[in-house]
Image 1 (cartoon, rainbow, N blue to C red):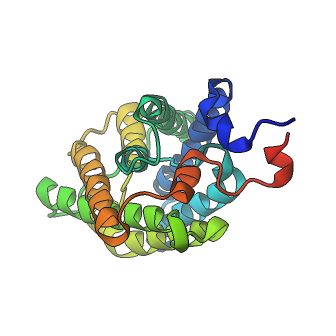
Image 2: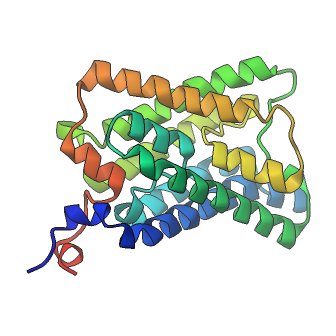
Length: 252
């Protein structure tokens, strides 16, 4: 008799797999998000801004599809904290997830530096010309509130759209980047910003990319309570990486 897959999340013998998934997924996300600026600098402008903001959205979509069922594909400390505040994810597992995400960002930045050198500030996010740190923080709060609202909304009850949630999340990341990248870098993710900052030593207004996304995620949780009330079991499964597994996977 097989143990139900929904119980596997409580079995810590599987935790290494989830943490590896978060590390690997965040590595690929930061590799593309920061790598666009690095390659653009090395190629003397061959990667235009629109390509640099579209690429991370497409990468997130691919990651959600290929391993979202393993860990939930949070890829972002703001998302993990929001799921915990929403009571879809246990607080005791938050430190491990956040550490894995930060490790993925550091590994990606380290790979970029080893491969291309410390060029393009290793893709570090920073305010645009003439933009204050306060404005940057506000923009990151608003952008992240929208991103996490999309994530929570597409993982909740009757509004759950399964694997197609990846399309909604990717679409939001691309749209946010298309208009806000010149202002704040449209990070929405502390792991994406801190990796290049630490490895490249580029600390310009770094705190805006920590405070902004976390505050935005918290606000999104408030929106979710207003719009949908208490959390649903479906959202628990999405946050924990068990929402869309096949019968074969469940019984393996």
